[in-house]
Length: 257
Image: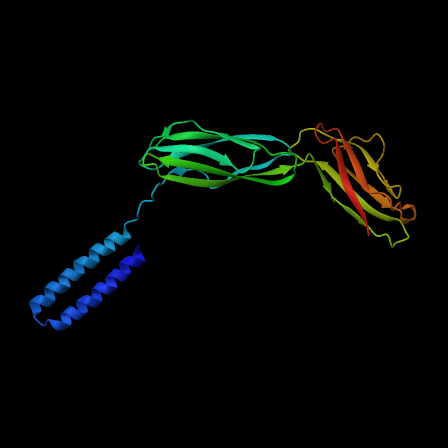
């Protein structure tokens, strides 16, 4: 808008300059300059007035973040949608990029200045780490003008037990036993759960875990003895047994290179 006004002003000024060059009468020059001043003033005011968007719909977060949540948890939240325009608006159908999320919103038109809750139900699944679903909110006003907002919904899924490191690496070229330490602790989001047993899947592996130990925070040593290496082992690693209901078995892979 402002670029077009500037172009108009430049063209208009050039026309006036040529006109004044052809008329030397003072009264004509004064009247022309006065008219030019008023035209430029009006154009400047028009360019400074902000234009209202076609449909300024909603006061809603640009991103909905659940923060840290338990792995496999079911989440729910209500987000208020506010009609900031001066026209009734109808939410057509909230859509999500994943079948793991369901939404609901009251039907009918949302009147100017009114608000309605958008309910979000999300089962984030068993994967740990960052989860994101794209929520698309389609809407239509009384003039049948359609538009949509796209809002990312995120959550950081935290496992019940955190293992450090999550993978061990040993060398098959060393003839002496090799050692490493593994630390396992229950994440603070979880109120219960303990490590109850540690098992190995390769005779070349052994641990310092004591039978009968029950702990929610434990460190134990792992030893790899090349002389006992069994090359036919497929899933070489350490299995950690816990008292958790959903994930009673954790696995720490071991690579031998």
